[in-house]
Amino acid sequence: MSQNPESKPIIVLDFGAQYSKLIARRVREANVFSLILPYTASVDEIRGHDPSAIILSGGPSSAHAGGAPKCEHGVFELGIPILGICYGAQLMAQELGGEVQPAEKREYGIAHLTHTDATGLLAGMDPQTQVWMSHGDLVTQLPSGFEAIGQTENCPYAAFANPAAKMYAVQFHPEVIHTPQGAKIFANFVHAIVGHDASWTMGSFVDMEVEKIRETVGQKRVLLGLSGGVDSSVAAALIHKAIGDQLTCVFVNNGLLRKGEPEMVQQVFRDNFHIDLRYVDAELRFLTALEGITEPEEKRKIIGGLFIDVFEEEATQLGHMDFLAQGTLYPDVIESTSATGGPSATIKSHHNVGGLPEKMNMELLEPLRELFKDEVRALGRELGLPADVVNRHPFPGPGLGVRCIGAITKARLDTLREADAIFIDEIAKAGLYGDIWQALVDLLPVRSVGVQGDERTYEEVCSLRAVTSEDAMTADWYRFPPDVLARCANRICNEVPRINRVLYDITSKPPGTIEWE
Ligand code: XMP
Image 1: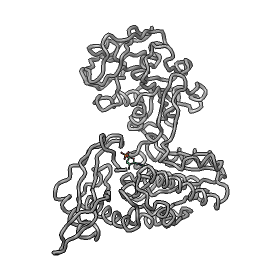
Image 2 (image 1 turned 90 degrees about the horizontal axis):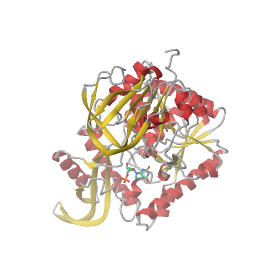
Image 3 (image 1 turned 180 degrees about the vertical axis):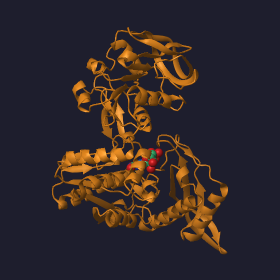
């Protein structure tokens, strides 16, 4: 290597495949930093990041169709190593003089790769190994200088390379778990071929981001809406490390929080981290606005709208803020690729204080944009946040408002808070908290007859829900040991005065969602 690549990122050019975001993550798992840019990024923009290598992702399009997405041809002339994956492999072949044709047989699913690779890309992989294919086109002729290094039954050029030019390509997806030895390909590419020495860690990410935040913010002021959830907490700790008192956090107690949450947030951030934290008690305002409302979408709209009002009032009192910081993660960024427009990023409206940045003339600061949830948790640990905060299950913005089914009243919310605290406590005591993606309690708009101490009761019913999931897009119900559920039901009925019946929700997603409303 002519230059030490350690401080340089590997850039993933995103052509819109569902799996592209996984590629950047696999590179980071090999202890090398990577960034995702849309395929429309110009060569100048790419050069601006001073990358050590480029990875071209897969994409939903057909390489030989008119209007197929292409990066600038200059990307292939940057003189740094390139790895093309699936669509990226086809684009590389086509741009460099090879040929791509529709395959006679679409290949989708598991295939078996055989290889006799001497280039190093497939080094250490079994000579016959399972790979995941998903393509309708095939490279039918390699560009000059390239050689085939692996094939599957239906794909003679399943892997090909031009080692002298440091160009490599695989038709299959090494980033998905169905390619069990895929991690070797990333390790070979980033270490042996590009020359990185696997020294990048979350600690390096902190140093790099702190530097970047300081540079972006300068002497200006940053406002952050702290919810107590993992993402905004980690964003707050990171930004505070970078700019200290130039950061002001606002925490709105909307009356829809979990038991002990307002106290916990204030203790961690004000007392331990010494962050400038404004606590706004807006419980009465929220509960008044929600009085008599039972329709789920209406609840969400009222909660979201009022949150913006309260936040805006607070921001106005603080004087002009230049940046609005958010803990937006990569999976929150919805990517859409069109032949003409290219990937555009829209942020889930429920994740942020939508509309506020433009209205108040603030810029967005999103230091976690590149990361996945578990990486954010690792970052939080690196920044010294307590395990309770870092490992917390996700909690929706509208909070208990979407778990208090039917009418929302202070009394019902208190009931729900108690039941929720018991459920979480029993899960933690059984050592199961980390196995579960999210556990929650819903209070149902039904009452049922029971008997307690020889007395007839007619009280509330709650439903427990616990799910496992990778990313909340799909989820399965958690198989509890029966005695854990028994303890939960027992304690809830005994300790929560207004509940006399406990159900367990065994609906997966789909068809159910994780939250009930
Ligand atoms: P669903 O219920 O759609 O939820 O299966 C998927 C994940 O998103 C969370 N969720 C929200 N998070 N604001 C949020 O910040 C919201 O309005 C919201 N609604 C659902 C939910 O808890 C689960 O983790």
